[in-house]
Image (cartoon, rainbow, N blue to C red; front, side):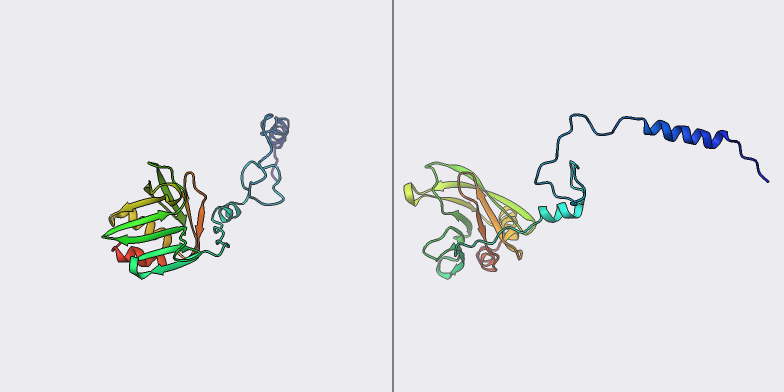
Length: 191
């Protein structure tokens, strides 16, 4: 028979009770999480996503596919991939011209304007410096470069199975449908 001293269990009980009397770990000035926080429904009151998988899924949600009748066209004479309602009404194009890859966003551009055109999609992002070309209603944004790491990065954004978002400060974002046609323009210049 073993005799156990009552001091051991009593010490444990006192430590447990002392922990119960401590203040809450939630700061008094804490605020409610924003409405767009993704997480488990029963996890109300959390300031961060309770379910990392749900948060990642929301972050990787596919871009909406354009529904305004635009699609890709191939213009063999100009070695150009054209996105828009028709070849004669482009909203965006990628062309190979004299060994240079030209990316054009057809949208009003201020005379002498400069900016960066960004491409996001298929788990990748790339950008190119752009400048305004033309004037008035005939103006647009143009980014040109010889085949390089930069143009290869842009080509990789378009190479996936999903849509691509094209953004440029001062213009409406454009979401292109997935297609193998842009690859033809990059291939024509060897990028």
